Amino acid sequence: PLDTTIPDPSVVCLIGASGSGKSTWASTWPATQILELDAFRAMVSDDAGCQEATADAVFALQAVLEARLARRRMTIVDGTNSEKSVRAGLVATARRYGMPTVALVVPTPLPVCVERQSSRPRSRRVPEHVVRAQHAATAGAVSGLPAEGFDHVVVADNLGRLLPFLQRLSG
Ligand code: CTP
Ligand code: MG
Image (cartoon, rainbow, N blue to C red):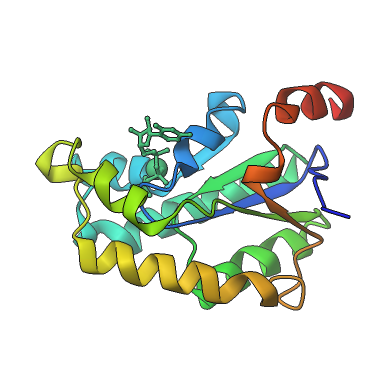
């Protein structure tokens, strides 16, 4: 059967290409529980799309993540997370704090992810070749996510309108 389990608390790692709808899914949770990499880029550089700021943004996000995990607070990591090394870091951090991990995959078709870029302000637009690479990396990663150490691998499409209900049950 499909895994739709998202324990509370847990660390939810969103995985999907730009434009797949990760932040839209993240917004199902209270704003204070969402650590969005773009928001940390903006906090350190005033520019959410500033790629040069990524290392500092990751450093700041990691600090907040650990502060939350030390308090056993539900935390949603909203970034592309399409690289295995990035996911490995999140799983290792969650493990150190004894928190369960959820990979929440957002499998929106590539043409939809690409089309959604065109309605964004120029500074927030991700080039098509990058979206394509993120999409391929996401598709290629799904079957390996349990072996990467995620306790639950949930495909967002399977949650549908159930999510708010599931959260109420676990909350
Ligand atoms: N969107 C939509 N229907 C959905 C999900 C998203 O129409 N079911 C729209 C959103 O309104 C938004 C766009 O698709 O305008 C991209 O969604 P977003 O959540 O911002 O995508 P992310 O995956 O967060 O993209 P990024 O990695 O660039 O932050
Ligand atoms: Mg987003």
